[in-house]
Length: 413
Image (cartoon, rainbow, N blue to C red; front, side, top):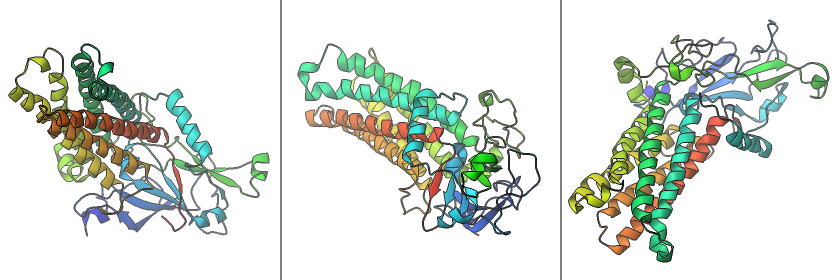
């Protein structure tokens, strides 16, 4: 059997769950490449799912013994890595007897998350922290783009030292203080995926007037962090302290780096880890250009030295961003050739890919900096590449705060 069609025994999600509650559809285990780990799997919610909010033993939500065929949990490696619990509702879900959550692309749900982006700062959640750091780093790069590009299109706006000091200092801050730190945190996020998996939802009994308002429905499906084993809700996770949110299979809540055996048998076959590693390598090499861009360095280098330790790191580092964005896109796809336009993570990766292309072009065109046209296009590439990174980062910030997405599928998941 191909590697992408089955989980390794120690890595299969939901082994801690009652088998009557979640039924794995083995035909739905998928991944874009046969030699890499699965990136998605489909589970069906059983009518025997217990209420996480009560201590009762009664089964809820059954319709004459049938199961909730229209309610599915879609495990995706990216969502699992970021502590998200996606539900997929089909047309038959309305007949399950459950009060179902509203889809997350509903305007009111979108506005709710947008508000959280400005009012909620879960610094203990590494997925949020990564997105927040990349967002500010992208803003700094957008400012850098103005410093570098605006004098070329409107020379009258240029002030003394704008390119040397404004451009050089913002390049250092963006490359070293934001992109490098964000990429290191991406690696920590990748090696702390939840190997046990967790459902993240519960079926709760309705009572009183609320039950009457639901036209006879006796229970509702709601988000639940009570039994979540992801590290994201743990406010002490970055210092390695155990908590009730620990991975029940590993017995710990945080690791700084996996063992050599885990790297060889699992992580080197994991698309998300490979994408994060490419991002980290690209950012590390790119940071060389961030240092050499500083005033006092860039203006004291020969042309050959400038080509070698300023422009070349931008080309190599930017190429790492391109590889990373491509791998993140592929991770969200059912196969390598079909785009996942309906998955938020795919759009995040797409815009980061565009940003990587812009930064790589800037370095490549920089080798011909003596040409006015090449200098113009190099600065322009940084400009639009920075805004592409900003779009991807803002979407990623939104994604990190929406932990329980609900999708509606007409044709089935």
